[in-house]
Amino acid sequence: MKKTAYMTVGWGNKFGEPPKTPEERERDEALAVELLERAKTIAGVKVLEFKAPVPRIPGYDYDEEVRPSYELQIEGQQAIETILDLYQPAAHLVSRHFPIRKAYTRQELESAPLLEWGPTNQAIEDDYYDLHEDGYRGGPKASHRRCGSCRAELEQVRDLAVDKRKMGRRALSLTYSFEIILSEQLAQRFREAGLTGFTLRPVQHYRKPYPNEPVLY
Image (cartoon, rainbow, N blue to C red; front, side):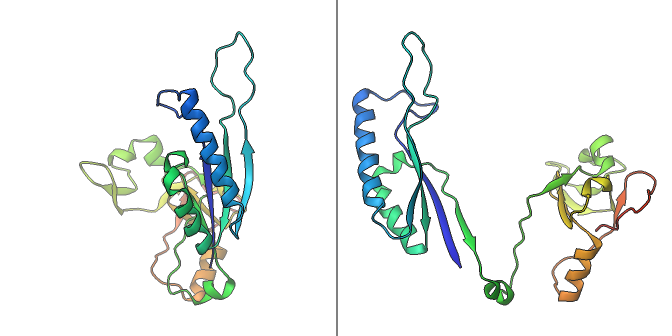
């Protein structure tokens, strides 16, 4: 497995906080640049982008259009740990958003005991009756039995009825409520591979059938 992290370091004013004094700004900028020079010597670290503040135009009062910052790409667990240790004294300059992306070899994927699937393509609207007849509140045509207090879905009680045409040529998609929709071909691949831990339930078209209507689950 290969890990790649992305870290943004900025020394400008922060939203919702009082503006920095010139002395604070100068101090933070010097610290950020000093750490950048040290970070560039670490194996696996790459500077992706460096932004500097735009010049102000006399007579206009406006915020910085470009916040002074730089972004680092960090590859490998050792480099990630080293960078985190390096920037610990300057944690107030580091963005809270610190994504770490993982890439696996084919051998690692094939030998993994568990597949955690996180599709992001939301191409299909929610169930027609949930969307248009107040099914989110547990009405008579609701697709799920829901919690009486928070309306969270507890159990699916009927097949989903969606606009199948929005699936297009996709093999996999999501509804706006993150229901996973599969094509017949992908569902068959799952069966042939012997995957377990899931159930397949037919998805219906919300209106009358149409020519070449796909089979979805």
